[in-house]
Amino acid sequence: MANKKVSGTLFKKMITNGAVNLKNNHKEIDHLNVFPVPDGDTGTNMQMTMMAGVKEVKNTQTESIQDISKILSRGLLMGARGNSGVILSQFFRGLYNEIAKIDSDSMSVDEFIQALVGGYQMSYRAVMDPVEGTILTVVRESAEKVLHERKNLNSVEDVLRVYLNQAKETLIKTPELLPVLKEAGVVDSGGAGFIKIIEGWVMALEGRELTEDQPQPEELVIHDHIGAHQLGDVDIKFGYCTEFIVKLFDSERDIELEIREPLSQMGDSLVVVQDEDLLKVHVHTNQPGVALTLAQKYGDLQTIKVDNMRNQHTSIMNDEVEAQPKKSKEVSKYAILAVASGKGIRDAFLELGVDKVIEGGQTMNPSAEDFVNAIDELNAENILILPNNSNIILTAEQTKKLLKMTLLALQQTKLKYQLTTK
View 1 (cartoon, rainbow, N blue to C red):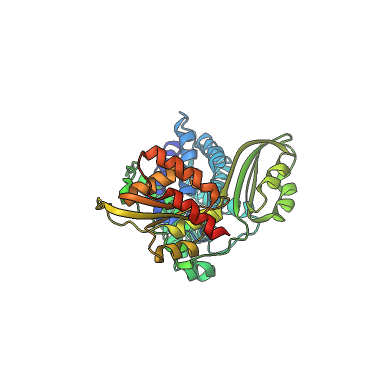
View 2 (view 1 turned 90 degrees about the vertical axis):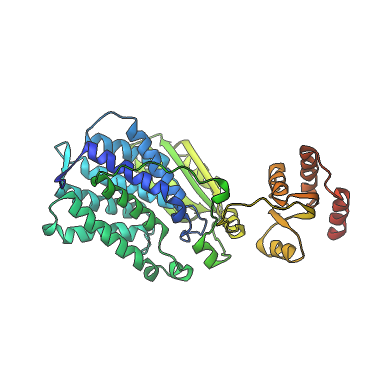
């Protein structure tokens, strides 16, 4: 039977199902990620954001749709990760703002449509420079479509069917709106992730309760970042994805507008959200420390996350597809393991016959664990390590002790380094 209203209980089921559906498919979304930076984490960030909100909702016993949406909104804001995660949290904040206006314990079809409209409007307001061809376009055009079709929609199922169909249509055309997507041959990852959430809502209305998939065994994980590999190496102008939450000294003061201008001078992909006594900031910058110092003028830092997107992109470009389970490798007599920084040098080593290259250099030294894992993968009786940097030789020697095996000509490796650096 079709639902004419969305109760608090049904809303909770929809939210949970949407989050689980996204989590079960988040790797697929990661593989599409090229905008604003091809760092392969959109799906991961979105599902972690959603699961943070759902965790808070599950911990409450209330059946009030107003309370549930408020708790969800706060939980999403606290757990929001990445550009896509913060935008997603603001979509649900917009839903909450509309739901809070309702006098009853459930949403009518009209009120549900208005909540979807409020979601897209809040998403746009949070972003400093909204870009079309992203999740923003998907949520906007989907809401506008149900508004246009309102007279033909008599149930929640009707609304979501039209909403989801439009979301899919908009997603398909995102490459025409955002050139980098067309160049990479992919659709927008944020929009694709959002569709997974809405698909979960529809399944909940159909009575299909999803469960979290078991994680894949390591040997079956596929590292195929389709979009990023299509683009190849890119120049990332602002290298650090910087996020933090500040508990404000003065919650009555409009810090959101005040802090936008100086932060916009430090980088791009800026999203700033003020929610009562909390300020959430996401920005791509080369000066994360400066951004954090600025934030401390307004309150106490509650959470901080800084990711080096250049390293993330390099890692993606160095990944090899492993579509089949790993087979036990025949033990070889000798193998060569080298340390190098950058795809060009890595490829040169491999062309010269090096069996494996691990990422590292003057300012990014591999750990002993990195060496141990690489050696285990090589499966050779004797392994020659080429550290190619004096800072890495000690770690290579430590690896030798850890494995209690002879690494052939380790002393010669030192000589090799000395000769090549004269």
